[in-house]
Amino acid sequence: MITFALAKGRLATESAELLARCGVDTAVLYEETRKLVLTSADGNYRFFLVKPSDVPVYVESGVADLGVVGKDTLIEEDRDIYEMLDLGFGECSLCLAGFPERKDVLTSPALRVATKYVNTAKQLFAERGEDVEIIALHGSIELAPVTGLSDVIFDVVQTGSTLKANGLVVLEQVFTGITARLVANKVSLKTKSAEILPLIAKCKEEVA
Image (cartoon, rainbow, N blue to C red; front, top):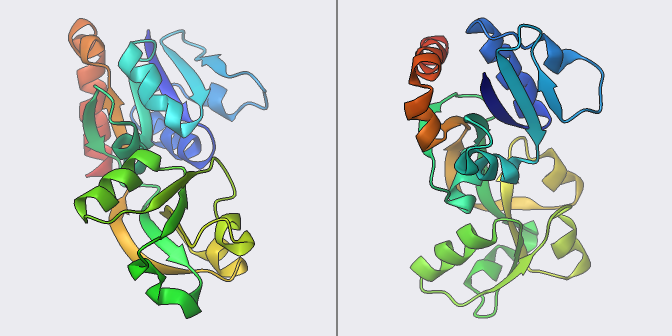
């Protein structure tokens, strides 16, 4: 049995579509259920539906053999796993965003940045030699500058509609071309190579 850790939501849906094209029985992923552990009808595959940030954790621990998660999460988590394939979907950018009339705020000596990508933000500003205050949040990041909690946010942007709805704009694109990636547990790649490697090869053909 091959076990997948999938990020709940849109990535799980797109992952299911891709895996189905590669011969994986993903029908169970389309069923109306609140279960977080699902097994295919043929018993060959198991799926964990987890938060995006938890996908690398499950894969690194070996509880899951493979996972699908955004590159932004891989950068933030920096786990000891293999990144096998760029799947090409779920494209977005990691950006600094704030109010359009305050574009000069990025040069502020006391910049306050709200983000759920704390590690990535710290590394970014350390490399720039800038001393900023990082405010860790876990949801509704756009609310931070609106309420005065922060000057800007550091977050993923796909369509920009949520930013626009809250009067914010992208001030700087930091990482572009962020897409979903197929990741693998290092031990599983050896012990289950006969099952995993052909599947990865099929995925590669599909996204080529």
